[in-house]
Length: 433
Image (cartoon, rainbow, N blue to C red):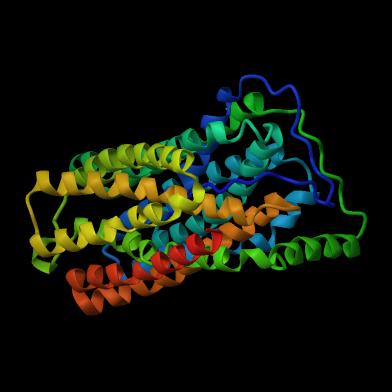
């Protein structure tokens, strides 16, 4: 799960950057900005898997391919310093939204060609690169535009906006694909879906040209290549030399160890026939239940998780949040063993998505804590990259594990893997006690 990680920013050369003053009506742009984060992240992380499943690509290959597409979110610290020394975060946000819209439109155009699947994967990779960079710019713009004391007020709603993007991509549009596939075939349905996504993203770029804060201070251009190398080295060393971060960084790395496996296989499990151990949902049912109802409950869960952390404190919340984050592994294990009716499947997905949303706040809080200090925008990218390492490695292996063990054995293994983040969360809790 590609979520938004925020921190309080600093200037690229170590001087504290004050938030832009006079930012009126933040509700005009905060929701749309983080909706624009959630949309392409879900296209790459979930919609691509459903699309490839329609092309009858084997599960193991889908898991490796989609996990590979998530690499830019892990590797983005490598180019995060560039956002600290060139142009403004506003410029990057608008430009990257435009590029993402072009890539989505290109997928709609090329998917029926002879080289369509290969070209689509390349375009998904381009979207992933743009989206990962867009996330850093959006986070940085939010940080620089609002005072530190005002930022927590919006944290839960940022998750709602992000998950609204997920709801649109893996819910509403999957339903559209399912319905149109029955009428005009799968290729036409996917062309319409990617065309709609391109139009939405282009509209967001145009809207943000007028709605985003425009009094953000321009970052000074690097005076030389040597100066840029020095700044980058300062960003990297200041993050990894914080001795108090060891247990916290370990938690960030392993937090998604089980979830990174489950999230890759769950949509495939829901779509596969009961003869091979799946639940046999149609594309429309998947969109309504997993993308629609599940997306709504995930957003609600994120609000609940933020409220829990605020009420009992971040330290006391770390273990219950981590427990909630791994509830999906248990739920899918039960679904694989029982193969229940459609209403029970829907209820189970509602439950696990709500718990997943609650638990996602734990990772955001851990990233926030690790990113404190100088160069927080870049440090936030480093922490977010570390969060993706465990998820990507686990995701790449998940297809092979599932093919070897079957769905029941796979979800049992994922539940065992959930023990690692819980142990590290307990260590973090005890160290802060």
